[in-house]
Length: 551
Image 1 (cartoon, rainbow, N blue to C red):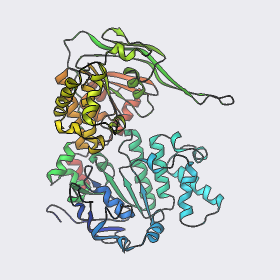
Image 2 (cartoon, one colour):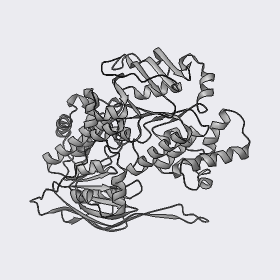
Image 3 (tube, rainbow, N blue to C red):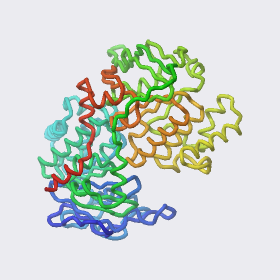
Image 4 (cartoon, rainbow, N blue to C red):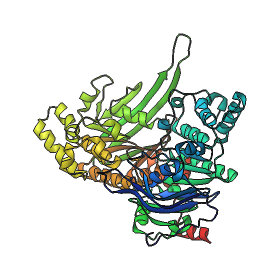
């Protein structure tokens, strides 16, 4: 055990991990994914395991569940004691008996954990089927009760719905229902709120806490966000490159972190301090959006009424060179639809988008009339990069399509890779060889290759570790200053908006409900929905508050 690490008392622990080491395949960046990890979780207690991607925290969760991809990745030392039984000594049939019945798990991405062609009720029903025969009527009753227990509306309708018809927050609630339907004594939650809206995240955290208190469940909660830790944790374990570097009561770790890595993670949380807008000398309005409307219609048929959703309703704002506007709201608020309209990826129904005083056409001439000067950075950089194209070619492709000579375009790509901190050698590698944060840097470089004047960033940091997120936000600020870009920054996190934006437009159900300077909106919100978003942001306890909790 490293210096500064406090062992949690193992007395009456539901789960004890003792000196656990997990190997990695040959050729990995290190020999052990987890090295000598020791932790324990008591009944009714929440232990948060915190660290960046690659720290080994999810490896511990998968080892407890028996889900490691053996033999390439396997425990090589230590014990995992669940109610006194060493899980590493159990056979696969014995582990199957424990999964779901005694140990439940909520995965990070519910859409990949749920079967897209099975109804919600059938998927929860599989948990009963795996652990004995339950009469059909009783099974349906318990499934409905589980859906109601996690706060889902209209369980009678949802039980027969498919996953794609549910929002991200609703799918995560279904995963929690699956994990808790047999009332396990241990719940493992692996980054269950990472990419959720702050309001949905707050609801999920509250739900986990309430269910835990009601049932006395022990919770192993894996996260990279100390804001989340502050909301839910009783004890904290901090991991770095496979090793536990600090552990102890949450109030103590949050109020007086001892290890430099813990302090680094806490410092990386977006501060959300609203900046005052800096007046610009440029009188030209680079972007003007006037009465923009966008409606999605679907589902119409011969015997079926169509569904209509107004994603944008009379949206108005303007932007000057060097300014950043934050579009803020929950999923479904219409902010991403507005962003897609701005770059010509989605047609709009009415209104006007003026770029440098010129009305951007609605037809296929949109991109031509914008001249490539409006570019987008997407939320998921891996999905937006061709996995079979080398990075250099991906960055140079846009300029080459605009008539730039290949040699000049590749030279520009090399310069941009250096600018975003990757180096020219990255040009010959493929997307899968980079981390999420590095791929987002590549996405920024690809957008800058077109020498844009307006950059639209759609949730570019929502799924990143807080430390990587801080680096990417710093990079955005750097390129905005260096290239005097105007930016539309789409986010659900008001901490990020406060740090990045000069003005904020808060969207709800397709409408802008509040608009103004960032400082004014965040410090004196006028609309109830804005106040709701601000209240939902996970807040790190101050040292005084942490000390009061310890007392």
